[in-house]
Length: 605
Image (tube, rainbow, N blue to C red; front, side):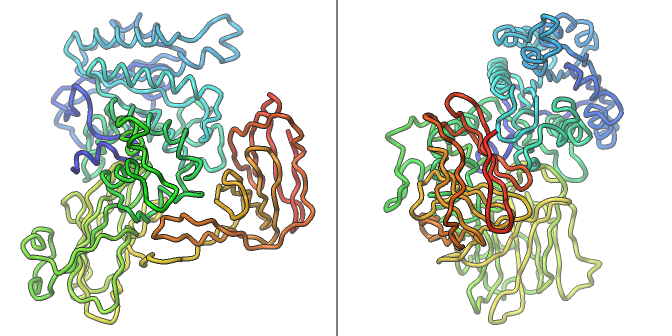
């Protein structure tokens, strides 16, 4: 089961087709074939240089050599012509093929088009990859085929070359599967990263310096992916192996993404964060968060709710792909089970999973909140078991309130130990290098009996988000309020008396504007406003939210006077909410922004 879950993990999973993810051997020669990104990767600070440094530090006895073979502007046909000289003559044992950006970009790059040159056709791109892989494998070397990364970093899919890049990345995935090569799905890794680190939808500057070529963080990220592919540990933690995707699993997730965007987003939101239906990325999973539980809801539906079963509607492959995609978007603890054990057995013994395995528990309680909480007057030791979904590779550490004694085991290794009764010098709290994927987490805890448990903890990404381990029971209605901060927000929430597809534009002056994504009309507006979404949590938020605020009597019209209005997407820019749509055949932006303290203005650009 653990292996299966890892296949469905966030970002990219560990399974590879054909060649398994092997550890490095003595005197390995690894060649990186590519374009200007790879050429820069072999320079100081580049991804090849960073990876080579880490390999040398971790495995100095193996004498592994990493060789850059990138040339600026090159495409697949160029790499074919120089394969013998730049790759095979080095007698490689492993070859990374990271190509495809110019094959796509040269179809639209103004300077290239002005010179009468073109990109590579899909047919030539695929045939060229197959030809090179056959020749590399013919000399006994392994191949890791990388998908092309980005031409523009906008996270909403609006970069001009996104569609063609997705097509060529799909070709690479198919070729990897057919040729029994490993796949390093850099495109998916970059897209996932940008979704979480590009909130203002910039076209460059997050991972690239110019929308294509890597900046410092971009090189670091690729180096992390490469080290995962090489099964090289970063620090004392296991190698971030689950950045490697099998072509089969990656294709399944992408198919699931397509199914979701066609069917599910109307109720669950384009980012899975809820609307008329529940959020699919928060902690609360009333019907279970395991792969089997999620598939069961997809197949059978939820009686008494708008969620119907799709077992008789979609083929099994599509339902499994949808399940895989939903799992790939998770962060934090899932499948949480809290067990309580008798105190006497554990007296004066170090808390370990093996010790708990040797005695029967008093109770076992699945926690749909996926956060640990306790009833009043709970007595006994707690054993918490869960799957931990990590979306970003990086350094993490646990923050645990020191009360009683606590041991935390991650993937079978003790990473935290604290005990009120012993000297703090004996405490353990390791900084962890965690790879993106799914990890096994156990929390073992004992504290002096009182009227309520005081255990409290979190997992902190260094320089990043905090994931809570503890919380409160959500069996009932817990008010949740959404307000605009210093920048605008656009959310899709089911508001009473408004269409389900209405976009709620929350402006920094606390004005909320309801925009109809079907007609382009302003439906209603409020000042001094907030969204009160008080979900019926046992029903997974199947009730409409409400607007608390003063209605603006005189609406500012959108200016969209058109026979045909077709919504495309939305984004925010500082205090502005921007809705992009085809208006009578022309792609335009409807911009909604604050005006004074209690109003708004609308322009069409």
